[in-house]
Image (cartoon, rainbow, N blue to C red; front, top):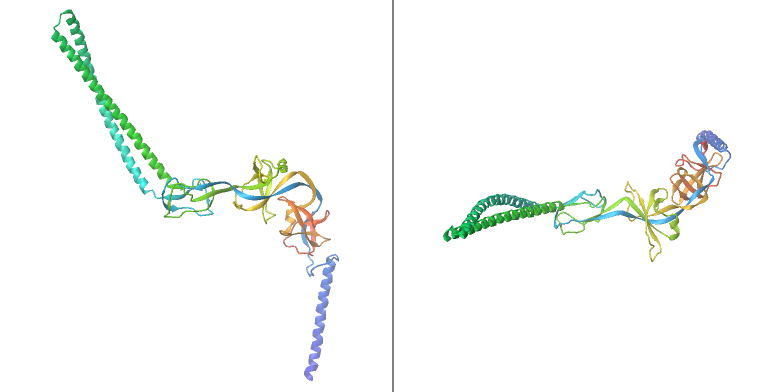
Length: 417
């Protein structure tokens, strides 16, 4: 009984404390409600500080109309990795996905036999050069040996002419004339023999020079074959389709992989005849990957086929994109937007004011000091502004800062418009 009497005052005291706490909470809530200007608040908070934000007044303006085309990415250039020689692969220096430069070494073949052939050809060239020197020396001697028979012939010819004249006058014996005649024939024969020997020596020199040329050609070809044991990248780009391993024996022309140039890369679209008025070489365009409507890539129309495809009646158009960072890959699909010659009225807001993800974009509108989250539908946009198709009216103040941290119902203060 004594215990019960002591507990009753304690319970009453606790009830009083609870009532005081609840009353305090109620006062805070009321103060919070008043500080928000009497607007409907989606969350109650004891924090009455306002978030300073920048906002822009949405106005109807004139924007360029754009046409959208489905696009696929293609390499701007590609080359096969292949060799000119048959041989055994000793080293491979590339992998799929690797970036390479034109002329970069990718594969090495066994060059043992070719190096041995080079040594053999060098020896043959040296031998041919030595034989040429010997032949030139012989030819020089043979030419000198022509001089004496030439002099002898001239002497024999003079003696014959003098003896014949005397013989014709009856002043010389017949035997003397016959001897002079015989000496002339002998001298003529000796000169012809010397000339033939000199000619043979000269021909030998030409033969040795031809041998040197053949040996030099063989050596050059063998050295060229040595170069061909190193297979290099045909162009700059990304390696794909690797089909080689160390120890493999390859034949000339075997495709060992491909090098695809993706910087620049081409976005390929099909256009109709009606689009040709604004889709022209040099026209600037915007490319976006499927699933990423906010990331844009600048491009320029590079070429348009001169004739339409007979089946589709469409013209194939290639758009060049720099792609210096290599993020765009061949075979990927996207969308190309090209400005037409027309304009239209639309509401546009800064890109930085947009939050959310594809299909669920939103902005915050200043509603008498309260950040009001508003779902929106977007249209065309550039690197700075977005067309708003629905969710924002002309005259609304759209908050452009702190979008990622704001909550629906936060108290805000516009510090700049």
